[in-house]
Image (cartoon, rainbow, N blue to C red):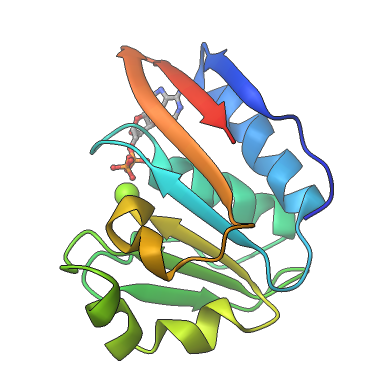
Length: 142
Ligand SMILES: Nc1ncnc2c1ncn2[C@@H]1O[C@H](COP(=O)(O)OP(=O)(O)O)[C@@H](O)[C@H]1O
Ligand SMILES: [Mg+2]
């Protein structure tokens, strides 16, 4: 991943979340991993949609809750969008074939990444999102 701005900021509107997503897409290199941590409704899927937009993905990005992972190949890099909410931990993540994706030369974005943290490389871009209030989110890029 090329350099992006690290630290905490308040996304006052969803437009700020979109700006972050577009900057991640710009900075993304083959094989990068983005680990998203935050409660339900904080905007993990929304951020992923904006990353997809920045990559130039033309398909509609739909939350992969029931499939664990969805692939989008119409952008600058393949996008592998995971939602591991229903997994019990890294073992189930491996049995779902996740290694093949995260070791591949696409961009992997993982919702609920705390559940599979032990399976992720240390250089994953870690993003924590917290609910601030209606429309606002506190986002920390580590
Ligand atoms: N600043 C913001 N950043 C991201 N999403 C926001 C923001 N303000 C409101 N939202 C809304 O919050 C919801 C987040 O939903 P979603 O992305 O599905 O969350 P998650 O995947 O974390 O469960 C969306 O309806 C989105 O429009
Ligand atoms: Mg989601």
